[in-house]
Length: 170
Image (cartoon, rainbow, N blue to C red; front, side):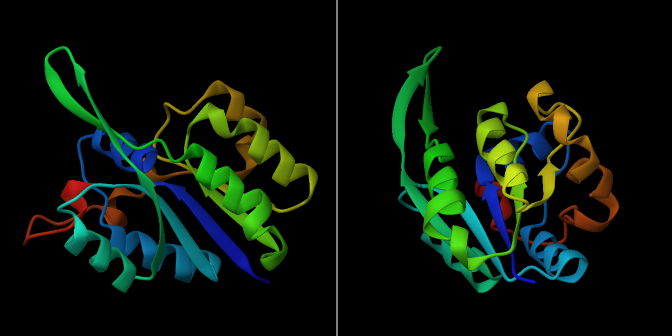
Protein backbone atom coordinates (compact mmCIF):
# COMPACT_ATOMS: atom_id res chain seq x y z
CA UNK A 1 0.00 0.00 0.00
CA UNK A 2 1.33 3.44 -0.94
CA UNK A 3 0.82 6.02 1.80
CA UNK A 4 1.63 9.66 1.13
CA UNK A 5 1.85 12.37 3.81
CA UNK A 6 0.89 16.01 3.21
CA UNK A 7 2.15 18.43 5.88
CA UNK A 8 1.08 22.01 6.52
CA UNK A 9 4.49 22.97 7.95
CA UNK A 10 3.39 26.26 9.51
CA UNK A 11 0.43 24.70 11.31
CA UNK A 12 2.55 21.81 12.58
CA UNK A 13 5.47 23.98 13.68
CA UNK A 14 3.43 26.70 15.40
CA UNK A 15 1.09 24.16 16.99
CA UNK A 16 4.00 22.33 18.59
CA UNK A 17 5.80 25.53 19.62
CA UNK A 18 2.59 26.64 21.38
CA UNK A 19 3.03 23.55 23.58
CA UNK A 20 6.46 24.81 24.64
CA UNK A 21 8.73 22.50 22.67
CA UNK A 22 10.26 22.13 19.22
CA UNK A 23 9.60 19.24 16.87
CA UNK A 24 12.63 17.36 15.61
CA UNK A 25 11.75 17.02 11.92
CA UNK A 26 14.24 14.20 11.42
CA UNK A 27 12.62 12.15 14.18
CA UNK A 28 9.18 13.00 12.80
CA UNK A 29 10.16 11.75 9.34
CA UNK A 30 11.47 8.50 10.85
CA UNK A 31 8.30 8.16 12.94
CA UNK A 32 6.17 8.42 9.78
CA UNK A 33 8.36 5.88 7.98
CA UNK A 34 8.52 3.35 10.81
CA UNK A 35 4.98 3.66 12.20
CA UNK A 36 3.00 4.02 8.97
CA UNK A 37 5.39 2.76 6.25
CA UNK A 38 4.85 5.95 4.26
CA UNK A 39 6.10 6.15 0.69
CA UNK A 40 6.41 9.94 0.25
CA UNK A 41 6.22 12.92 2.59
CA UNK A 42 5.32 16.30 1.10
CA UNK A 43 6.13 19.33 3.24
CA UNK A 44 4.35 22.50 2.17
CA UNK A 45 6.37 25.50 3.24
CA UNK A 46 6.79 29.21 2.58
CA UNK A 47 9.96 30.03 0.70
CA UNK A 48 12.05 32.59 2.57
CA UNK A 49 15.43 33.82 1.24
CA UNK A 50 18.21 32.83 3.60
CA UNK A 51 16.67 29.50 4.62
CA UNK A 52 18.30 27.48 1.83
CA UNK A 53 20.41 25.35 4.20
CA UNK A 54 17.29 24.46 6.20
CA UNK A 55 15.48 23.45 3.01
CA UNK A 56 18.45 21.33 1.96
CA UNK A 57 18.52 19.62 5.37
CA UNK A 58 14.80 18.87 5.20
CA UNK A 59 15.25 17.35 1.73
CA UNK A 60 18.13 15.22 3.01
CA UNK A 61 15.80 13.96 5.77
CA UNK A 62 13.46 12.69 3.08
CA UNK A 63 10.89 15.46 2.78
CA UNK A 64 9.67 16.55 -0.65
CA UNK A 65 9.38 20.32 -0.34
CA UNK A 66 6.62 22.23 -2.08
CA UNK A 67 7.29 25.95 -1.84
CA UNK A 68 4.91 28.86 -1.67
CA UNK A 69 6.22 32.40 -2.17
CA UNK A 70 5.88 34.43 1.01
CA UNK A 71 4.59 37.92 1.60
CA UNK A 72 5.76 40.34 4.25
CA UNK A 73 3.41 42.67 6.10
CA UNK A 74 3.34 44.77 9.25
CA UNK A 75 1.32 43.60 12.25
CA UNK A 76 1.28 45.90 15.28
CA UNK A 77 4.55 47.46 14.12
CA UNK A 78 6.31 44.11 13.68
CA UNK A 79 7.32 42.69 10.31
CA UNK A 80 5.57 39.34 9.75
CA UNK A 81 6.08 36.79 6.97
CA UNK A 82 3.15 34.80 5.60
CA UNK A 83 3.26 31.85 3.23
CA UNK A 84 -0.20 30.24 3.20
CA UNK A 85 0.25 26.76 1.73
CA UNK A 86 -3.36 25.54 1.99
CA UNK A 87 -4.11 25.69 -1.74
CA UNK A 88 -0.95 23.84 -2.69
CA UNK A 89 -1.61 21.08 -0.15
CA UNK A 90 -5.17 20.62 -1.42
CA UNK A 91 -4.04 20.65 -5.05
CA UNK A 92 -1.29 18.07 -4.52
CA UNK A 93 -3.34 15.69 -2.40
CA UNK A 94 -6.57 15.83 -4.40
CA UNK A 95 -5.28 16.23 -7.96
CA UNK A 96 -1.56 16.16 -8.73
CA UNK A 97 -0.67 13.01 -6.75
CA UNK A 98 -4.17 11.60 -6.10
CA UNK A 99 -3.81 8.59 -8.42
CA UNK A 100 -0.29 7.81 -7.12
CA UNK A 101 -1.22 6.80 -3.56
CA UNK A 102 -3.65 4.44 -1.85
CA UNK A 103 -3.98 6.30 1.45
CA UNK A 104 -3.15 9.80 2.67
CA UNK A 105 -2.07 11.24 5.99
CA UNK A 106 -2.87 14.93 6.39
CA UNK A 107 -0.82 16.81 8.99
CA UNK A 108 -2.68 19.91 10.13
CA UNK A 109 -5.27 20.93 12.66
CA UNK A 110 -6.63 23.67 10.38
CA UNK A 111 -10.37 23.55 9.70
CA UNK A 112 -9.72 24.99 6.24
CA UNK A 113 -8.81 21.43 5.25
CA UNK A 114 -12.21 20.03 6.26
CA UNK A 115 -13.44 19.75 2.66
CA UNK A 116 -10.22 17.97 1.60
CA UNK A 117 -10.31 15.55 4.52
CA UNK A 118 -14.00 14.86 3.95
CA UNK A 119 -13.27 14.27 0.24
CA UNK A 120 -10.44 11.84 1.04
CA UNK A 121 -12.63 10.01 3.55
CA UNK A 122 -15.42 9.75 0.97
CA UNK A 123 -12.95 8.29 -1.56
CA UNK A 124 -11.63 5.86 1.11
CA UNK A 125 -8.20 7.46 0.89
CA UNK A 126 -7.89 9.08 4.32
CA UNK A 127 -5.60 6.99 6.52
CA UNK A 128 -4.76 9.34 9.40
CA UNK A 129 -5.17 12.96 10.39
CA UNK A 130 -2.20 14.13 12.44
CA UNK A 131 -2.81 17.33 14.40
CA UNK A 132 -0.20 19.28 16.38
CA UNK A 133 -2.13 19.47 19.67
CA UNK A 134 -5.61 19.45 21.22
CA UNK A 135 -6.44 22.90 19.81
CA UNK A 136 -7.42 21.66 16.37
CA UNK A 137 -10.54 22.83 14.56
CA UNK A 138 -13.83 21.49 15.87
CA UNK A 139 -14.74 20.77 12.23
CA UNK A 140 -12.21 17.93 12.30
CA UNK A 141 -13.81 16.12 15.25
CA UNK A 142 -15.91 14.19 12.74
CA UNK A 143 -12.69 12.30 11.96
CA UNK A 144 -11.69 11.68 15.60
CA UNK A 145 -11.15 7.95 15.04
CA UNK A 146 -8.28 8.81 12.68
CA UNK A 147 -6.72 11.67 14.67
CA UNK A 148 -3.21 11.38 16.12
CA UNK A 149 -1.88 14.25 18.26
CA UNK A 150 1.81 15.11 17.92
CA UNK A 151 1.93 16.79 21.34
CA UNK A 152 1.30 13.37 22.90
CA UNK A 153 4.50 12.11 21.22
CA UNK A 154 6.77 14.74 22.79
CA UNK A 155 9.08 12.22 24.48
CA UNK A 156 10.02 10.62 21.19
CA UNK A 157 9.75 13.61 18.80
CA UNK A 158 11.07 16.62 20.72
CA UNK A 159 14.26 18.27 19.56
CA UNK A 160 16.99 17.75 22.13
CA UNK A 161 18.91 20.91 22.95
CA UNK A 162 22.27 19.40 22.14
CA UNK A 163 23.23 21.33 19.03
CA UNK A 164 22.28 23.57 16.15
CA UNK A 165 19.12 22.59 14.34
CA UNK A 166 17.30 23.64 11.21
CA UNK A 167 13.94 23.19 12.93
CA UNK A 168 14.05 26.49 14.80
CA UNK A 169 13.64 28.50 11.59
CA UNK A 170 10.46 26.81 10.37
